[in-house]
Length: 167
Image (cartoon, rainbow, N blue to C red; front, side):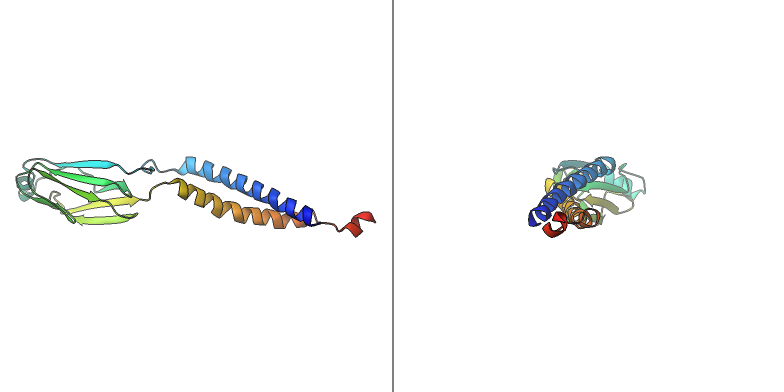
């Protein structure tokens, strides 16, 4: 009897993990974010010469979107070609130099920004897609599925004791 129960458990684990892998992989491929990636990258943002004068005159300056999307660990390099200092959140960039902002944890941020007419710069930070994340999804789905398969297997195929099977 214990041998049958153990075999059911092993079979349920294998079936549950294979099913979870299939569902995880199909849903990942269908729903994956094109911005998600497993490595951080370096993004350069250039402040052109004459930006301060255009902002003072109320003219639009950079053609940046309202919100940019990054991944945890990305580096935003702000290169200032203007004749005055500019600021993006905690990064102060003197004229003719660069400053680096390492984006934080997954969240939506609004930074004060001196090179945008609106004086705000929004960034959305997405989580890194790591192998660990995908394995975690597999385990979180596979183990409960295996447990349910194992339990339901007793309803569908009840285990018979030796006494019942010999009579």
